[in-house]
Picture 1 (tube, rainbow, N blue to C red):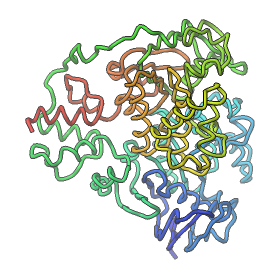
Picture 2 (picture 1 turned 180 degrees about the horizontal axis):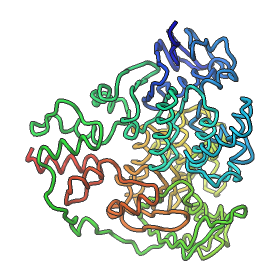
Picture 3 (picture 1 turned 90 degrees about the vertical axis):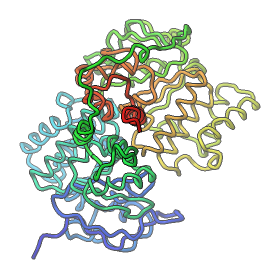
Picture 4 (picture 1 turned 180 degrees about the vertical axis):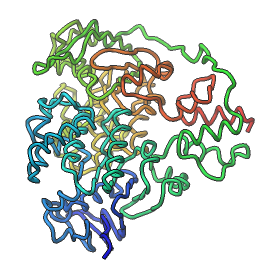
Length: 575
């Protein structure tokens, strides 16, 4: 008798209680032991629902109607408890806070193995290994709630690794992680799958990192399986994927745009940086000598109006010996679009919390709109600077969108006329007009993110700070949010963005600040930051794929996006 499939789903349809249509319908899938599978799809397509099926949360925790069957290692999930299934199938949620329950990092990782009856010596060994896997060595006694969002996500992954399940189910496991951390986590988990014959199922928008690690991609769209095959055959459908708001590697997107031009006709679309470089080199697009970008590529218009000024700012949390910020100097002028980037735990969120006076500098002076933040309350800065945190759920508390938007205007003493004017403006700008009476808790995460941003923008602050605005968003949702921020910047607003998305930094920001362990490694134009490859590596960052391609080809002009590269190549080819 042969081994049972790791996952077998038969004629599965699931409708959440109160929903008008199924979240998944007519799903038939078989995943064999040892397969490494990427589940791709736009937000709201049913990917998270599929994850919930794989450890019994559906149907045992979530209410709704289920037809068909799900088998995990031959066990029908209808007939097994969540506790039993969790020993076979370990699930990492997209929201780390919903998964963390223990007082320390050590206890959090130990919790699962202890419940499985693993001997103490083996538990300690697993904790050490798991911490090394996710770069959290030395954090054993830290409280999970004191960690950054990315560190919390790493901790959740470590906790699942320590349980050694046969099937790993990871729902956006690296959405809060820096680029090097993302690469490292994916490679570690893929190695575990390979060496220990584990089954790995990953839901992610990060196709560039996964394209060489997965053996199969399943595309879910509108609750159904739209595509299923190896990476090359799935990415061959690049036109469909782009229309369906599914992220594809930048080099694949580039060649999808180029393939109709006679000079660039290719039989297969490249799916890796190396393939794209080899093809363009073959076509004669490599410059013979390294050249320096033109000076005009680095000009920058400066405003005289200083909105944020940090002068030798330091900050230490009471429970930590190390400084979260150390000798930070920063000037943000009216009209800037600044990206604050750096590895997890580098001090990015701590910095912006100081800027809005949620924290107070323990060293140096920080002024916002001319006011010393140590001498003001947060609300006194609300018309000068507004902040949107990476988790919208900690900012949303009203029973309807309209009440969410109205709350701040009342607190700030807006006249009814002014309040209505601002609320109409943000409802139109953020596409919320038809949702004003809906509960924020009833819409998807991407829409909640827009509501959280709108609730800050409605106050018309001079400066808008957005902390990881596109976490877990599909490309279309991410672009919608960034286009709104970009348009506000063009209208004179100052934007400070914290992000791990290097393509978004390249495409939208004008200036960049790189933090590492509380220290500033770089301040300057975005156009310059990607030349500093060693500094980026130190900060666990790396240039976007398209910029790496430009570096390999020694292209002598500024290339920051797929469109930039497309225009350059078309011009060079005379197409």
